[in-house]
Image (cartoon, rainbow, N blue to C red; front, side, top):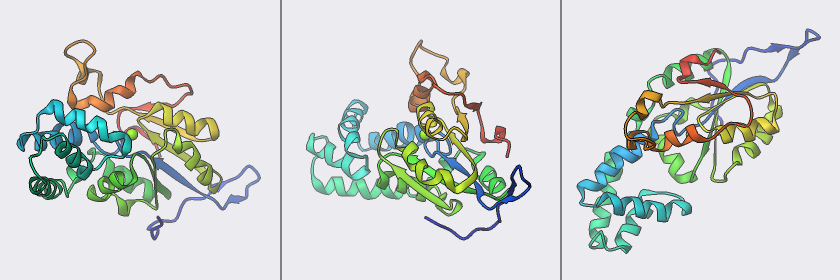
Length: 248
Ligand SMILES: [Mg+2]
């Protein structure tokens, strides 16, 4: 996806003094990096299903069943109907309309530092590229509903594990400076392994104090984000807790 530029990239000067005509860009991940996916999905969306009388355990089981096929609200409701939790198709249709209306605006789920960071990066001349993992239709809905689409010059989705490294193959030679910000150490590893000059930032939105409680169990508020804490990075990445720490 390409958008009109609001700022021209600052050009890098090479060792011989000649300007590198290529610009610079930042690759940004979406879930748990820009978007508080756990609060949206595991807290608010699950609560909305519960208000329709869907038991939490059934909701999770049906989610696990359809997730490998690519998540969508419609598929989730279809599975609940198949299990007999939703009595008939008319109720399923009403639930879908109600949920889509309730979650049509996802801007409140952006982390508070996102807007200012994207603005500052554009001001400094970086192109912004969203590289997102997940079902393309579901990812596209979240990006659009969070109001972020116009902020990016390119948006790419991959449903393949490790697919970000392959997406980067296409972009890698197009920029003089390329950075990546992601909460998944495995994705940063796969990108940096193929492009050693990539500047990588491993962002963690979960504070150690967020996980205090019963030993070894992350509360649903940090359910998915906390899992990435247990993935050891193979390569070195700059670590940060917020986008404010990424020096442009
Ligand atoms: Mg992520």
